[in-house]
Amino acid sequence: MSKQKNLSQPPAGLAALFETPYYAVMFTSQRRSGDAGYGDMAERMVALAADQTGYLGAESVRDATGLGITMSYWRSEADIAAWRRHAEHQLARDQGRADWYEHYAVRVARVERSYGWTRSDGPADPQAAAAAKDAGVKA
Amino acid sequence: MSKQKNLSQPPAGLAALFETPYYAVMFTSQRRSGDAGYGDMAERMVALAADQTGYLGAESVRDATGLGITMSYWRSEADIAAWRRHAEHQLARDQGRADWYEHYAVRVARVERSYGWTRSDGPADPQAAAAAKDAGVKA
Image 1 (cartoon, rainbow over the protein chains, first blue to last red):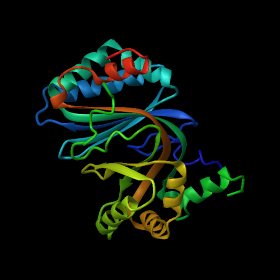
Image 2: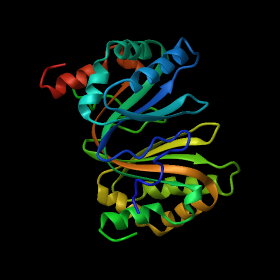
Image 3: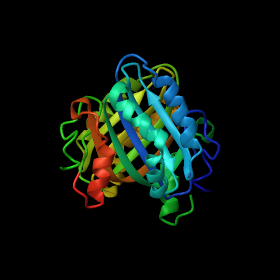
Image 4: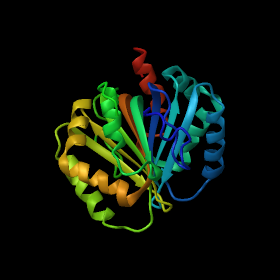
């Protein structure tokens, strides 16, 4: 059984389980109140990021208090660096600090392993299956 | 200038910028409707995780549709494996698949670098400062 089987076609809101290793940009942020053009720009940045070399996917959640986490997934660190240098993305980040955010943290990480579960998979622990596979045991 | 300066005492909702490298468990999930004991168990797991060896911190957001991202940060992969084997955590995960979740994805990643920004830091790009530091240039 492949641990990549699950979520190869991920449900809404989840990114696929890409072939490891890949890279994640983890962006945790607190929005200020008011839109001030944020919605349009966020939509534009999602579309623009998806056009970049090495972009794999993204996941994003923001709650009613304005706290949000956005993960974007990339094939390599070089791809992340290129996106960071994109002129339009730089302008959006500048406006983010000027208008939209109270504070944020950015973490760049190398994804070593991933697995997923959907209700139709049944109750068994997908982590156990993945761990057994890592240890060379048939799951 | 240290890129660790910002967020050494992080604002509410954000975890600190721990000394790299460290490890992140990225848990993206879709909740089912209804509580079914979820709130109490989530609170218990947050407290229990915080007691484990190697636990550094966590960030968590869930929106009104039930889509959530929780990041927990750990000193090492061995610490993550030990937490995964914790009996009470295993029971909580079993109940999660039985009752609380429609689907989820788990990604384990090694955080290579991180930086943060707060409004009082002013408008300059903290990424530029971190990048210059990485390149051996005074920021």
